[in-house]
Amino acid sequence: MQSRALSFGDDGDVPNNPLPLIIYPAVIDAGGGDPAVAFERLFRRHGWGGGWRNGIYPFHHYHSTAHEVLGIAAGSADVRFGGERGETVTVRAGDAVLIPAGVGHRRLSGSADLLVIGAYPSGQSPDLQRSGAPDGAAIRRSIATVPLPGQDPLAGAGGPMAAHWGAITPPG
Image (tube, rainbow, N blue to C red; front, side, top):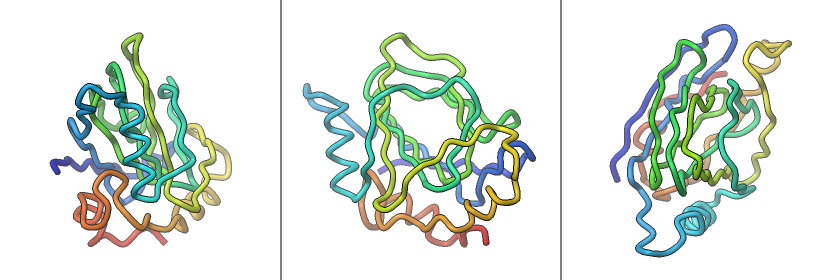
């Protein structure tokens, strides 16, 4: 399975994480089926739940209590990852993005048919933090305690997550 990793340092307003964000290009081909359902099944099979269907917020935000996976079921979007000084990535139907706890993300633009499927590792529940949130020290401590998921949300054991995160010690 192909993947690309992007790393972002703490920018003061968005803590980010030493663990890299992982982009999985064209990981889902629903073969004429419903790509949203295909993402949901794949995430559940690998122990990722708490799923939702929606879009991506148009403001910088992150989660200090959970890692998150986004599956692009329809449409496309330009998303800024890592805060204002981060990187803009165009995601398209079939792509997925694994976002470590603390890594900022914001939709800059998107197609009218954009549909995103989101999920979190078993046992993790997301909060919603905005860029520049007060009590940044407590938020950074929370991010440092978020455990690594048991499996890659798309490939299970031994997938790109293990390759990109396995040799990295999370903050803390």
